[in-house]
Amino acid sequence: MISYARQTQEEQPETPLPPAEEHIAPAPRVSVQAFCETVETAAAVQSAGEDRRLGKAHLKIQMGGMAAAIEAYRSAPTPNVIVLESDGRNDLLTGLDHLATVCDAGTRVVVIGRINDVTLYRELVRRGVSDYVLGPVGAIDVVRSICNLFSAPEAKAVGRIIAVVGAKGGVGSSTVSHNVAWAIARDLAMDAVVADLDLAFGTAGLDYNQDPPQGIADAVFSPDRVDTAFIDRLLSKCTDHLSLLAAPATLDRVYDFGTDAFDSVFDTLRATMPCIVLDIPHQWSGWTKRALIGADDILIVAAPDLANLRNTKNLFDLLKASRPNDRPPLYCLNQVGVPKRPEIAAAEFAKAIESQPVVSIPFEPQIFGSAANNGQMIAEISANHKSIEMFLQIAQRLTGRSETKKQKSSFLSPLIEKLRGK
Image (cartoon, rainbow, N blue to C red; front, side):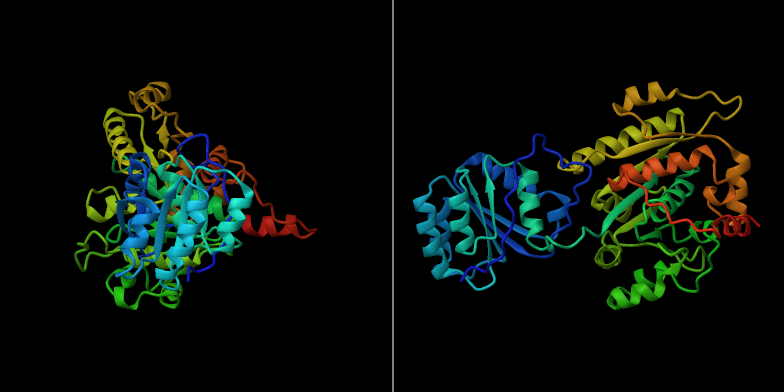
């Protein structure tokens, strides 16, 4: 029998990219076989198979539609997911009845059809079809349909990974990522974790005034032990909503990793945390490239000079080519307005990148230096500083949330604020 898993039929989007508020969680390691009737649908499924969210799925595409599927499974076991393209109505229902006789228990079926009819949809649901997608389909429609089979529709979307990387060393990407994570936790009231991936020289522990005995290195060097409980023991609590997976920041060992070294850590964090902010060091290796391409949203931090412009352009081009079904990365300009330094104007920067910066953060060494030396965020140093609103704006763009969650005030609030200031 085909397993029953009802999904709500979605209208096809106007644009090929998902909206900023939509979060499609990656699919687990599953086998998917598609039986298409048109080359256009086969091309869309092929493109979907190259999407990062189906990176762990094993996808096979065949032509022939329903008839080919029934013939294929007469003598072979069925995969986790079958994707069927069909133009007919009666032939579709009859074919599904035949397919059910050769289909293994637990197999989920996604149907791509051309008939927009609620009666047909109800008949498909009654037969146990997991999802019905109205054609013609794009790659993102296929990705969404398959991924949604393995996430509970009633559950809140969790596991959004945000990667922050500098276009050049020393541009302040770590400072930006830590303050943005602070805004996500404090102003948006989302549970978040900062993962400091610069194991040799990371500064997240210093910036949050934390010195945990364990951190992300313990997870990376013990992949067999990584699970929810193990990761939870490694987390250092910064605030009610913000945790830290700190880097050891020591040079007693060499941190050479394979391409998939962090996969188990990221997968475990996705299952437990609504928001994961990756502080990615400025280096180019297999695992940093994989972390960037695999993230849900990306922020590039750049200073307004020629080298940063070139590197930002290169990162944009690579990420857009590697993630054709995702939103383009975002970038911000940092350390803008250094005295006597020739700088590229934000308008010229945007013209070359073909995208506007989210914000341009001014160069203010006094307050940023004081925050770094004190192990504090900018919001803790100066509650009304203009950069705080910029960090919140970045946080809102990256998470797709525009509404801030203000804590309820009480008659003790003024006294508490004074004590915090001291």
